[in-house]
Amino acid sequence: MTVQPAFGHLHPVVPLARALAAAGHDVVLASSASFSSQLAATGLRWLSAGIDWLESEPQAAFPDITQYRGLAGKQFILGEIFSGRTAAPMAWDLLASAEGWRPDLVIREPWEFGGALLAAKLGIPCVVHGVGRWLNAVEVRDAGSVHLQSAAATFGIDRSAALDWVDGDLYLDPCPPALDVPTVRPKPPHCLVVRPVPWDTSHHAQDRVSWPRPGGRRLIYVGLGTVMNRRPGVLDAIVADVQRLDADVVVTTGPGIDPAELGALPANVYAYSYVPLSTLLPHCDVVVCHAGWGTAVAALAHSRPLICVPLGSDGYDTAAQVAECGAGLVVDSIGLATGAIGTATQALLDEPCYQSAAECVGRQIASMPEPASIIEDLVALTG
Image (cartoon, rainbow, N blue to C red; front, side, top):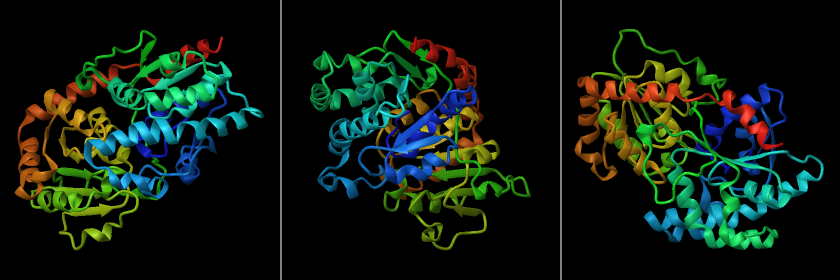
């Protein structure tokens, strides 16, 4: 299984990886060297491959990214980094590893193309494990088509211009209907639905944080993930707004940010660098986040309504669908200083329609086949 070096790429595929390992299959995760501790935390075998970088700190490996902002920055990441600069180095390293450990199947997430190159070169099946909507796979392939064609030609892959090798032999669709959107290029016919199972490093020491607190107050969770958490001033503004509500607030700052940077906090606010959401979400009433897929789908799997403050990537699409299905509200990041977060959060606490809509999405997710149930389909691809 190949993943780009970020929690948002790794965590969605871990439940299937662990299910395969539990069924007796030999599973190896591959990503960059600097991401090795996160791979190790899954309890699975892993190897370092490709360019050494972290998506949370892209400028360290790709300093020219600082020239791009907004949509141009997204296109640079999709087309230049994911499709151009990281795909071939990952594939070359994996080919070298395959001389001693030859895989029967490659599973990759939509933004990692080294696995696709490996599978096409070796003539073995490749599965694309979706993260979010099919739209994500469409966007990155379209943005990087020129680089992908060039890489395929370098590896001697037939019909490289058609890019039919990119979609692989099977697409695993983890998107509940309420969060899906139509696309110009339809989903491939070789497609299986799989439940998006929230996963986190629940063995972490802060798993011992106890919720709910005495007194039975409403509980609000605030977090901006592991990449968007570095946006200056956003988390501070959100916390300053929601702390005035009659509720307890749990804030996670994410990697690279010390909770002490939030300054002095009132007694109803609890700040940590990390708390496993699997232990926290069952006790929450509202989740305030950047609408990243991992956080949003975990909240909805627990039937928790959302305040979405999209900051980039696929967050805008996720936020729009959350609002469309009635499971939350969207607050633009430029309006944070106006008190909009506090007002929107209070609305979710007061009006039961948002909770009802979140429960509807939660039922959709619960009805999707769990990862262990599709293992026979994956094995069948290997012949």
